[in-house]
Length: 98
Image 1 (spheres, rainbow, N blue to C red):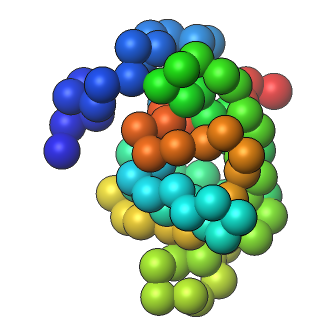
Image 2 (image 1 turned 60 degrees about the horizontal axis):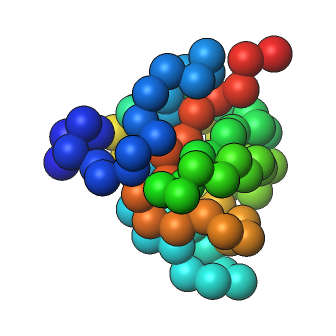
């Protein structure tokens, strides 16, 4: 699936680096991220929902989809993080510029 095909109207340059997007959100459980850029565990991410709401996604707790803890997040893989209120599928995920 191409990132350009996601129907999020807020797909534009926000000054942060596009890191991936949310492919699944289970309320009060988890988010599944498909990464497009590598990063380290603990890197704070910015999620921009299809409605334009900005949400911080913490990666202090991040696992592979089979439940193994992850330190180095690799581009093109799926990862699970704790659920964040308001974040839904198709939320775009950026690494924050510090």
